[in-house]
Length: 179
Image (cartoon, rainbow, N blue to C red; front, side, top):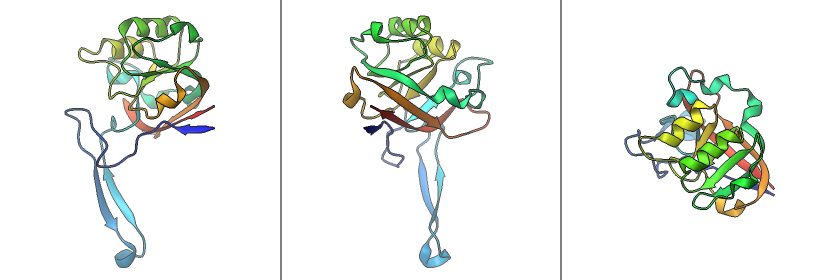
């Protein structure tokens, strides 16, 4: 079974406070041009996306500096309020339903996971200690995931593929889980 973990990319998709709102402009139509096309403008932290260390770590790795294998692997979905951290294995991708506590983030670092994520707009609030802890340890962060309730407590294979943007601190991605 394949489960889509990606939010829709539309003008009704919520944006993080202060981030730019997306714009979708029809630039060509079949009637006028013989084809349909749109100009799309959005911030790179819009919808379901991956943060790279460069987002909050001076001199941190940019998203395009990670090998493609980083964006796939086995892992688990845990409850953010009461996560069973013993289920995490080294190299896992770990997604949380809700925020990620600093204690949980420290465990993720100790277990050497490669990616953490949440169905929230951010895993934490200012001053972004969870962000900094994970990103300083080259653990990518996925935000705005969807349908994690369908995977609670389950191990599966994840594919979290960002748009291949050069020199970027983040990029929208398509995220799926395979049970």
